[in-house]
Structure formats: C-alpha cells, structure tokens
Image 1 (cartoon, rainbow, N blue to C red):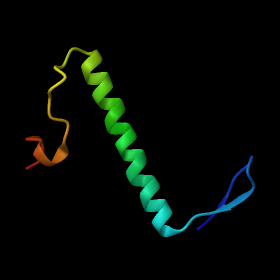
Image 2 (cartoon, helix red, strand yellow):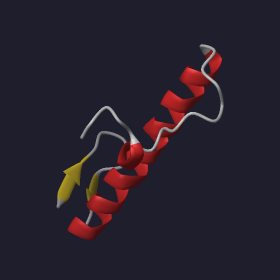
Image 3 (cartoon, one colour):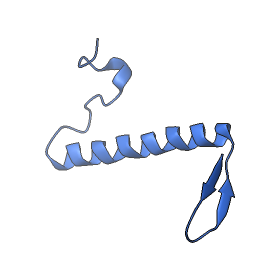
Image 4 (cartoon, helix red, strand yellow):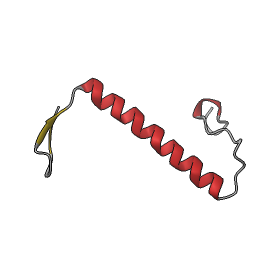
Length: 57
C-alpha cells in the first residue's frame, strides 16, 4: 500500500505490516482503557480480556 504523508513523503507498507500495526495499535488502546478503569477505582484484577468477558456471548 502506498501512503502519502506530509512530513515523510511517500511511504510503502505491506498488507502484513498493516495488519501487525492494527493489532499492536489495538493492544495499546486496551492498555489505555485498563489504566482509565484502574484510575476510576475498578480493582486491578478485573478481567479485561474480551475472550473471557461476559459482555459478549
């Protein structure tokens, strides 16, 4: 994929790199949500894993 940026010019990324970036970016957001939850008073041992979450069955 060709990406045109203002500061770095034209950059190229493979599909594999784009998928890896998307997964890593998602992990970052889960960490941010966990930090916000702990700062709001939720216990540190809560399950933030979507796989084991009762919210989606």
